[in-house]
Length: 134
Image (tube, rainbow, N blue to C red):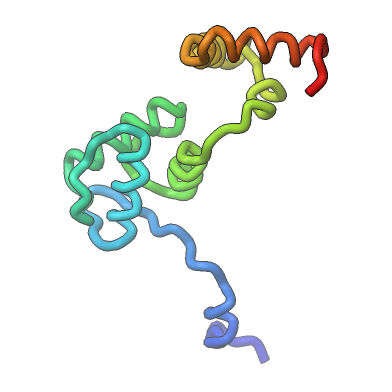
C-alpha cells in the first residue's frame, strides 16, 4: 500500500539540497553563501545574516552572470556560485572560446597574457607551434 510517509533510511541517503535563501534568512547556509560571494570579491561581513548587503551582492552576482536578478538564492545561483569558485583549466579556455557570444572572453585572455612574463610566452609559443619538443 502506498503512503506519503517517507522511510528514515531513504531520507538519510538523499543528499541535502541547497536551501532557498533570501533577505531575512540566517544560519550556516547564509555563512556559506557569504563566503562564496567573498571569494568572488564582494567583501561581505560573514555573520550568517542575509541582510541588505548580502542581498545587494547576490543581485550584482546574478546580474553579472545573466541570472534572473531577484536577490533570491535558488538552485541556479548556488550552482553559479560554486562554478565561479572553481579554477579554469587553460585547455577548457581553448575549447570553449566563443568571442561572438561571449565578448568578455577576449578581454580576459588579453589580461591573462599581460600577466605572463615575455620569456614564458616565447617558450609557450614555440611549444604551441610544435617547434620544440620537451
